[in-house]
Length: 502
Ligand SMILES: Nc1ncnc2c1ncn2[C@@H]1O[C@H](COP(=O)(O)OP(=O)(O)OP(=O)(O)O)[C@@H](O)[C@H]1O
Ligand SMILES: [Mg+2]
Image 1 (tube, helix red, strand yellow):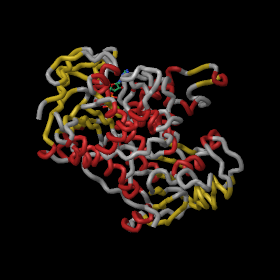
Image 2 (tube, rainbow, N blue to C red; image 1 turned 30 degrees about the vertical axis):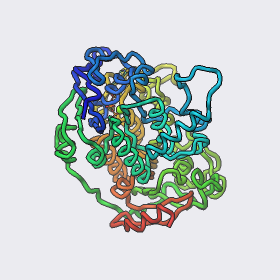
Image 3 (cartoon, rainbow, N blue to C red; image 1 turned 180 degrees about the vertical axis):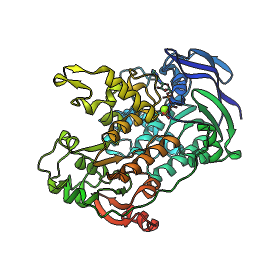
Image 4 (cartoon, rainbow, N blue to C red; image 1 turned 135 degrees about the horizontal axis):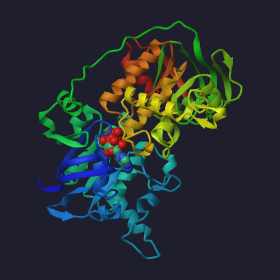
């Protein structure tokens, strides 16, 4: 196999902080080369250098042996490099076809030859098994389909080297299988892939080689066939991580929140709730199992006061909820780890410290005179404590939160929400995008919250996670509750069938 990419001695500095330090990385034709590393290790930064979003402080890039200067993303596209970002960059109101041809520089005339382009796109989609309805609007298709659009778009622009940044984080199991099949086809056609993932099993399954980054440096490159998950994890975090099993509990305490026959947007199978009844007791974790898009988002909105049930009752700490504002729920000590951290959990252009203190603006420990005077020293001391306690890797408290790595952003949310010592914690996909160390940390903390008497509602598309943490499990399908199961020795095959609507 010939070499398509070589990155040599790449360093990238932000201020005096090195996000990448003297990294060597190469990719061969027709190979999947995975970048593995903890949250904040520098994976996305390295790829952003490759696609011309960042200029390296030092180092050189070679494509097929020739030195290149990639000074813009457009140049990267021209050189045959495509990237599918974790957060898709599609225009929701437009169709699949419109998104794919958007910004295509090859045709400059006023008239777009739609028929010819359609033919070209259809051929591509057929060749790589990227089934998709070109006329569908982005808003109407699943996350997996949106990802296929992104891949198709990159291929349409002539990508020979495709970067997939955590491509499976938001996919259902079936969609993941579909993606693997696409990757196989891409490889067979001689395309090369840089793959980023935190899931060991998956990394071992799809990769030819794996390069481990730690704290911005390359640690080692290994052939996937000659290593295992344990070795990779060790290299990645520099210590052994023992698998653990959590003890399951049966709570008989009073319910903190209860839903009785709740309807919301009932006619929608994927975005509604239909006659949903459930309760979460003090000191238990209720896990919601189900394929993403079966009403879980709506459920999380109802129990955090973002939306109001259209029928039925919601009872929070013994009081019927008659109108909702999220502020009331916060007042009642409900904490929320939202499904989309960037849109709902953080304010991107505010600092780490400000995001940590978002919910404490009225707290007299941090301000007095009705908020006119901020106790800066107390704020800093508190946020530094949180940084140490939750292992938030950042350059300082004044760093903008949007420049933190994905995993570290999630730790900021966790710190803010758990420090409130909530009575109810609604955790939606709490470990999505987190490395194994951080995942373990979040799970340990949720168990500790439960043991301290918190009612935890865990909504997760990660079935293993639901099984590992839940004291009770409820399966949702098309907005309905399909069944309830004990978390102790749960009937896995029955639950799987229920998740598929059977
Ligand atoms: N624009 C920026 N300004 C300042 N620091 C930055 C910027 N971009 C990234 N960093 C820092 O560089 C480090 C590496 O971040 P990067 O996003 O590359 O990590 P990652 O390996 O992709 O992690 P994750 O698995 O969480 O996505 C982090 O400490 C981050 O805070
Ligand atoms: Mg990243």
